[in-house]
Image 1 (tube, rainbow, N blue to C red):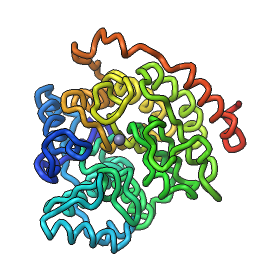
Image 2 (spheres, rainbow, N blue to C red; image 1 turned 90 degrees about the horizontal axis):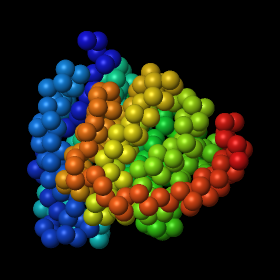
Image 3 (cartoon, helix red, strand yellow; image 1 turned 120 degrees about the vertical axis):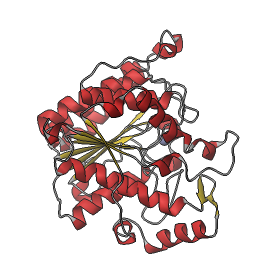
Image 4 (cartoon, rainbow, N blue to C red; image 1 turned 45 degrees about the vertical axis):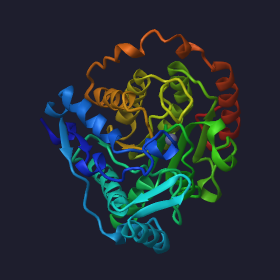
Length: 367
Ligand SMILES: [Zn+2]
């Protein structure tokens, strides 16, 4: 077995026990709970994923505060640290801090860095960072929407600034929500493609719209595919028809998936209708593209996904695709009639519009 076939699963027990939301009863912030990671790990253990000889379980890279400073202002970092040292509190309605938050959020960045650095250095063929708190809503200056630090943006800027890795990176954000923080980091950067599929009813501050294409040299490299609530597995797969030629033309050296699973039909926060097989088919398709354009290099970084029973299946569905093994969805997901009410007509209109605005920037996109 050569090392390039290995799949690195980056995790730490602290993600499964620390940074506990202050309100136990269902409310928005209570869903971002250590149980998410605990449930995933239990499920992967039970299904013998960790005994597969292609899977390696790895700890996050240990990082210094200086590494967080490549992506975040000292004020923001010190604020998180200070409130953690005080024992915690609510920073704003959708951001809770506990005594463990600073340390855990720092560890989450280390997890995302290990996932990306491990793949570009051929330590792993692909990787999956099972980290929390999530990151894609966090900005340079502030925490937002359950996110403290922007794990993906921080890792990419670390690769750029500390490792001099300046090659092209494509981010595919499949979280139910628009990754407003993540998009902003690279809005003028032609070397980072940001492609987001998200529920448009849910975007905050009216962001994540179709005509947000990037600015300056980065124009055409920010692609927002807002979808109506209730999209099905087939609808989601169909959206990738827009992405595939763009990835082929962009030719990234690394693909990073902002792997949120809150489009899952039973998710308490998202309103879409995907089942776990959608994530299996997504990973199979992206892997095939990645094998053609970048030697299969993909790093999956956990973002949202809050259904404690469904989330572990979604993660398994992706790992099985990377292993090229058959994925068997759970029985409870079968024969649910509301999962087949396609939104194809609406999606077609959105896709056609996107093709028309993207056409000037991409040879392979025709209106
Ligand atoms: Zn989300």
